[in-house]
Image (tube, rainbow, N blue to C red; front, top):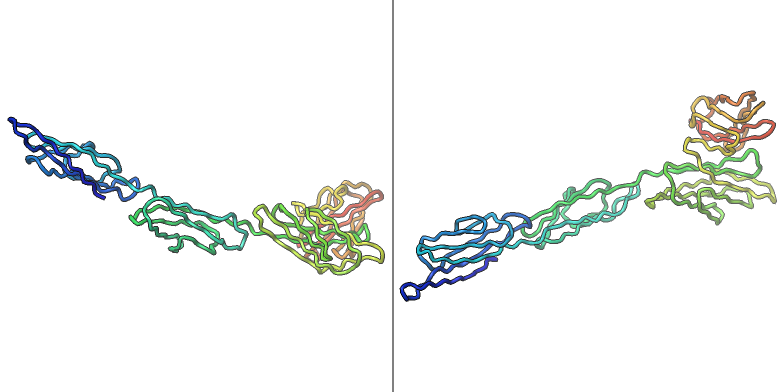
Length: 350
């Protein structure tokens, strides 16, 4: 928008009133905030040529361009030394800003529901160009990764903002029902996962449920039960695992009990850890090495998860090797006992 300012100046010469210098000032505003695209102009409308011009920024021409926003003063002097002064303002639009909204971390395999950019400042209307070539203001169904957007206003000014869509790791979880060979009708539900759960939910398949990392449950009848485990991480992502392949056997008037226990970070689950010091490697391929705190003659018994005895050996050592190369891959139990106590430990055969 150009501004017109008329500034008259009159001088007295030999008793006669004579017209001095009058000027008209105009300006062109800055196109983009912070740029030097403005201009100012002064036009003498009276006075005697030639004119000289002195601007506050040091310019000496009637028209000055490539100016930042601000106030500019000018003095115009004509050939008779008459002068006129004035000031003019070069304005600018507010700064163009783009703010991207990104939702929280997505669960593995899920698409982001919404990524939105909110512009402010500059001059409406706005246009958008994303790094994936979309020209919409909001994006949907995005995979994890880095995204940027260029927001332009009606003056052609632009600003770039970027954001990263993050995804939680792939969650895995499983469990196995292991018969307690030292206690009838008692089972261990041994579960493992590749993360640290923040919430646990258990469905025992008989209308009952539990929470927490180590629940216990009892059944009044033998049978196949569809047991489900649901574990959640700190992002709210959940992995579920269900199994109904194990027949939980009991006798009439005897309850069946199940204790859920976590597999340790080393890959073993020491069900009676007072007797077993270490088992390695776990998982194992050919040989399993067991170190125990037991003394005297120790019996080492190998069981499958159905409670069937597969092999047995006795040794007068608390540091033994168990040959497992002929076993099929799966989960197995080693039972150790001497004349005073016993212990159980689970391992995985690869």
